[in-house]
Amino acid sequence: MAEQYGPENIIVILGAAEGEAAGLAAETVTAGDPTFAGPLAGVQLGLKVYHACEPEIKDEVDSAVYDEQISMMEMVLDVDDIRKEMSTIRDEYCKF
Image (cartoon, rainbow, N blue to C red; front, side, top):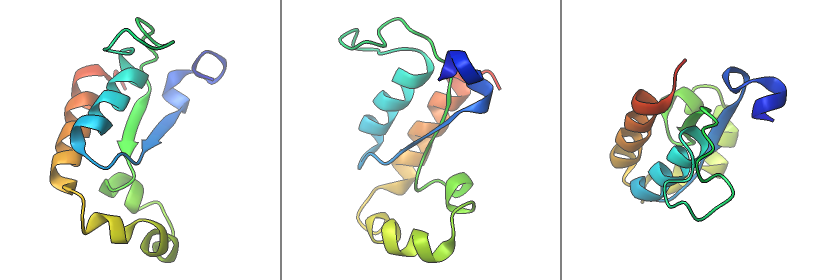
């Protein structure tokens, strides 16, 4: 899809339960699989990536749907850690 539509036209939304897992997935779809174990090892897709709990995504989703599907998880997740990790990955790897 990145080749077909261009990485600037794709956004990946993650839902990992903690910052390190979200960061690993985010790095995989931006800079390539850092573990060099999967099919994206060395493949730099450069996709912009967000977590479902980040304000950029939360603000775009119908509030009733967000409340029903995600808000309960926000109470048990370390949302600040997740947001920090995602921001770090975007700052380091995303070109747009």
